[in-house]
Amino acid sequence: MPIKLFDSLTREIRELRRPDPNNPKDVFSFYNCGPTVYAPAHIGNFRTFIVNDVLRRLLELEYGKDKVRYVRNLTDVDDKTIKRSRDEGRPLAEVTKQWTQKFHDDCARLNCLPVSEKFEPTATGYIREQVNMIDVLMKKGNAYRAPDGSVYFKVSSFPNYGTLSRVKERELKSGSAFAADADEKEDLSDFALWKAHKADDGDNAWDSPWGRGRPGWHIECSAMSKALLGDTIDLHTGGVDLLFPHHENEIAQSECCNGTKFSRHWYHSEHLLVDGKKMSKSLGNLYTLDDLTAKDFSPMALRYALLMGHPRKQLNFMLDSLHAAEKALSGILAKVREMGACGNALHFRRELDQIIANDEGTDWGSFTQALNLLCDDLNTPAALGAAFTAFKNITDLDLSQDIPWQRWRVEFLAAKRFFEQALGINLNIQTDDEQKAVLLQVAKIPVEIMTLAEKRWAAKKAKDFAGADALRKELTAAGWSMLDGKDGYKLEPIKR
Ligand SMILES: [Zn+2]
Image (tube, rainbow, N blue to C red; front, side, top):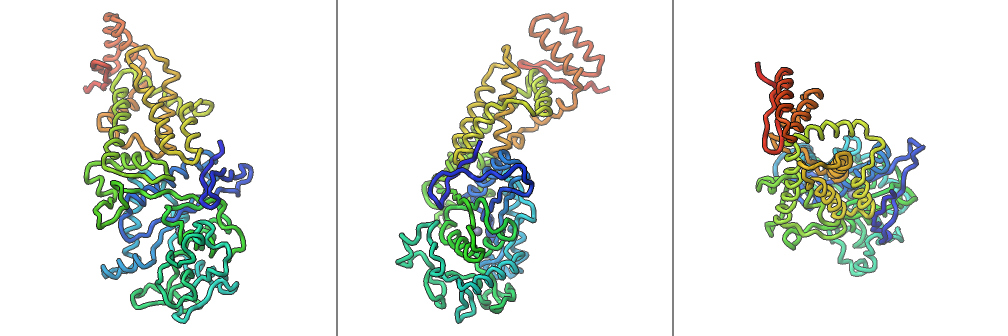
């Protein structure tokens, strides 16, 4: 299935490029602007990272893991990180290391796939590459050094400036879109590539042909994507707040420096509102993951709630939506648990393992159906709904009745698989101790014992009590006791 995604540049839903499966060097290159590591990320940031994680999972499922190269950077030097280091009297590297670790921990709790160190570059690790790019821009006449020693990009030198954000039509004329942060610029719309050292920067300065200083924020993404993914990439993403000026500036720098198209496709996820308002510290509606887990919500419920809205629409987050997500998740888990406690589940589980082992050739009906919804402009709410319905249809079956095993166990696994592999909603994380114990037990019970137990359970249900007693004796002789419950049984090894 081709993956179609809205392109912020052309303003239409377009197919993404599919890498050539026969050329091992051809990979799909995907750059996602990462966090600034000076404080915990809030749930609005995580909406973007979770949407991008689902997009990455979809690409890997459709193209193959080794055909997708995902890069997400860490901004570890800028005004905010330097201010925090100064306020706390600690070295910048120590501060950013702490918050990088926190970001990784939160991502892991939210079940975002990890990014390898090589593909999670830091701004301070790529100073040379940034200086090189600025040097090219200076030589090509796209940049100039101002009297204050800083280097600026000359926006008027790039006629296509404003194409992504349509900023020209909107605000370029009035200049209102640009912060009047430096008086030294030739034009209000020009932006810093290299910032000359100031006392406030402390030790955080590097040598360059234009004197000591530090890179501007925008150049870091241009330089790191060039270094790790090449001059032209397949997809560049970020939150909608980065569209202007950050991404507009990235295009200008990269295309002037490299003389070629920067990104084939642009994708932006929308803002997260909290209780109908933009998140802000002063309104007291800015939540971090820790704030929510302190209220006893699980990270998986947050992930679920954030995927309930279409990524390209603003999502209004309320604690009520977390309650709803938690309820939906616990409904699924209760059913899984119920099956775990029922005799049939042992049989079920064993066969599932066999299905997993012989994956090929299986018709993953609801998995494919839900995946197709993701392929259509990353429609996470529709995909979530389809998987949830598939799950419900299966788990609503009356387990005590004769049911078409072959069909529903495949469908059950397909829905579970979709939740876990495509949406990254891990259903096992939340299984309680009882469920874990049942699964552990299942793993340890020999197949012949399970077969005996299944036979005995069937005999008992058929009211063949003599047969059931005889089978119980066989089980006892083999060292297992069978404890009957209302809806099923438990097997335990007899302690001697
Ligand atoms: Zn960026």
